Image 1: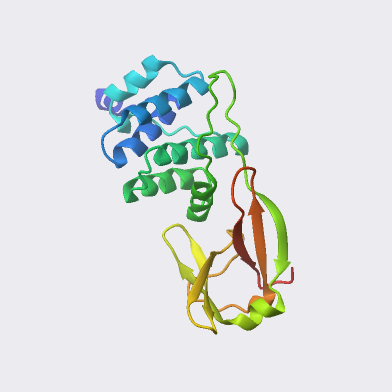
Image 2: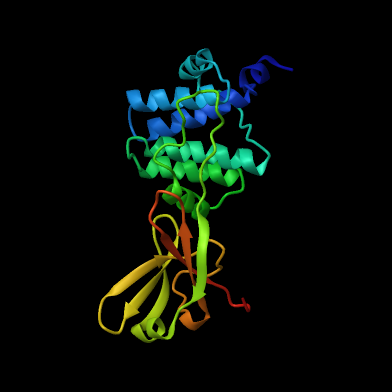
Length: 224
């Protein structure tokens, strides 16, 4: 191996990779705040990462750290969950931070819609006072799923798929005037601009303890 190859060799360390991505989220929105620093150290402690590793990552070139991401579904979900939570600590939903999260999410098999959904359902804090406890993010569950009733169908003049920053929504133009929007369920395969027949759609209600219910529209061309 030549000397230039040695210089190009990247550090293969999953702990540094995690810290690199966390720091990237912070710096994408500006300087690191005390709250963000504390949150990163809490995340590190949950994964038994020493504070010295954190300080090491502050000193080295982020590009020198190789990507090493979890392989199990649970661990990948946790990894992405922590990145999004960190972004929300100071309500810094900057375009650069969101783009970086989407970039990392794609490497782990997640879509922009997945990032949007997880951003919406993130808890105010997934951390417990004890650093020895495992983070167990609470997920939304389906409360009910139903057809649009006759009154709802009659009230809608047109329903069309429109884009938003994090994913598609259904824009309902009402016969009485005005519009309303409901996010499209991430399992639905509709493209922007498509007009849908809401008699073939489903209204999905999601619930979670301590939170208000949220709604999604499910739609598939094939029979339900």
